[in-house]
Each structure stands twice: as C-alpha cells, then as structure tokens.
Amino acid sequence: MKAAVLYGKGDLRMEDRGVPVPGAGEVLVRIRACGVCGTDAALFRGEYPAAFPVVIGHEFSGEVAALGKDVGGFKVGDRVTADPNVLCGSCGYCRGGLGHLCSRVSSMGVHRDGADAEYALVPAVNLYTFPETLAFEEAAFTEPLACAVHGVDLAGVRTGDTVLVLGAGGMGNLIAQLARLSGAARVVVSEPIAMRRDRALENGATDAIDPGAGDVGEALRRINPLGADVVFEVAGHVGLQAQAVRLARKGGTVVWFGVAPPDKVAEVSPFYVNENEIRILGSYNNPFATDRAVKLLAERRIRVDNLITHRIALGDYPKALSLFGGRDTVKLMVTMGA
Image (tube, rainbow, N blue to C red; front, side, top):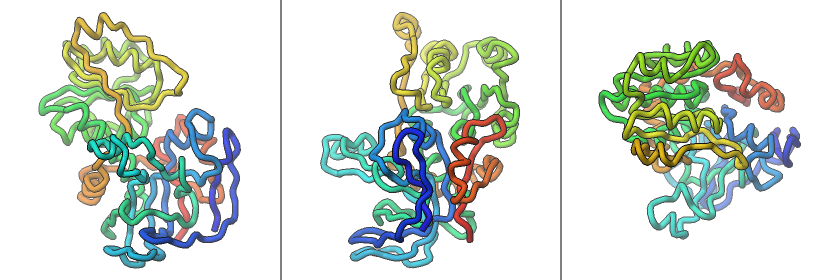
C-alpha cells in the first residue's frame, strides 16, 4: 500500500508498505479520505513532537476491510471514522475523567501510524459508523469538528451572546457554525482572506471583519459596544492570542484554540485580566465529542462541503504541505480513490 511517512522535520517520504494485519481488538480500515490540518503542518515544520517515523494524518474516514480477534459491533464494508487518540485508561487523568489529557496518549499520525495511507489499523473502541447519506469527505471532518465542539463547550456560549472568531480557516468556520447552533445572536469572524470570510458568511456567521482594512476592536464595538462575550483565537498566532484578551468584554471569555509554536509567548497584562475578570482557557483535543460530531454532520446541522478547496491524490501528498495555509485554501482533502 502507498503511505505518506514523516521521518522528521521536512523529511516526508512516499513509501510502498505491506497492508497491516489487525490484531486482537483492532480493525483494518480502508481509508477513503483524510483531511490535512495544522498539526500535520506543524509536524512537518518540526514544531510538534512525534514518534518518527510515522504515517501522518488523523482526520479520516473509510470502510472496514478486516476485523481482528474479539471485535464485535462492526462488519466488513461499514463506513467508519474515528477518534484518533488511544488512551491508557489508567493514569490519573484518565481515571479522573480527563482522558483527553492522558499522560500516555498515543495519537494516530503523531505517535502511531495514521491515515494518509491506503489502509490503517484502528482500535475498535475508537471507531464510529456513519450513514451512507454522508460522503466520505464530509465524514473526514469528524475529528476537527469534535475538537471544535469541545472548544465551544468550554467557552460556555449562551443564547444571545456575541462571539468573535479570530481566523476563518477550516476550524474557524466550524467554530462559527457551532456558536450559532449554541444560540449566539451575533457571530463575527475576523479574517484577512476574503474567500474565507465569504465561506463563514455562507455558513451562518452574521458579520465579517477584514483586519487588514481597519482596527478589529473598533469594528467589533460597532456591532457590540461592550465587546465580545466570547473570543476564539483559532489561528495559533501569539499576537492574536494577546489581542483576543482586549477584544473580550469585561467578564468575558477568551479561548486559545489555535496551536502556537511551543517556543512562542503571548504577552498579556495580568493587571488587565484581573481588573476585567477575563477568563482565558486553552482548548485541547476532543473528549467525548466524536459521537456528537458524527450526528451533527449526519443531520446536516454543520456544513462542510463548501470548505474543501483542494482535493489531492494520496500519491501527491507532499503537494498538500506546500499548499497548506495558502490564500486560496480552506480545507485540503487527501483522497485515496474509489
């Protein structure tokens, strides 16, 4: 089988490998689609730790190709997606209900072989079926959508809130849609790329700001003089993370959702945070949200079809990393053929 294997910073190789055989409790999945995300790009840039060499990719969907011993509840041909994070189940975080912060988590595409390949092994407990009415490419949004669900849960978006989303790429678009579903009266996206702003407005955002055309704070105050009840920073830019604190109203919430490089620091005034009771949260991973994400996609409550801007054949995977983040991109999707 073909596989995109990352050996280290900037060292991605397309390889021919044997099809893996599922062991006890495992399922062999024939991959049909796999999204490219910021974590993949960060891995390639050497900004995220991994167990090399590793088959990259973790936002995927496919079909059950074979079942390992003692696997029930699935059959060959089932359409499936997955939570790519395998938890130890025994550390203090797992036992305390914080499995997404597991001390020994093993994530597909990071610590164990992932899904930018023709086949992948997945623990059966991590698999979720989805209906035929949902396309494989749409189902490949399950993992990022689950992460977005967790972020919106943490933020506690309330009916009538004003929510500001800084960055309207794929994740920003998902968060904006979830904020509307959670009852926000105004969902404002700030994004320098017009095409991404347009996608967000198509998908339910009420307002869009071009940060290159003027001050974001002034534009926001024309919408809500107090500022935003909730601000999501989705770009992973430390400058924006600092700015987000000043864009929240007094008593507001800031969610640092985007992943900044580990050696970068956001400069925030503790006095300002204290005096204005700003709540700053980090959002990581997708705890107990995968099933909810599948349902949201299957019931067409979240739109993702218009977020795919590029489809790239598996054999051309290196092209995906060169395209990632471009001004004409929202979501890159790697396809494995019929």
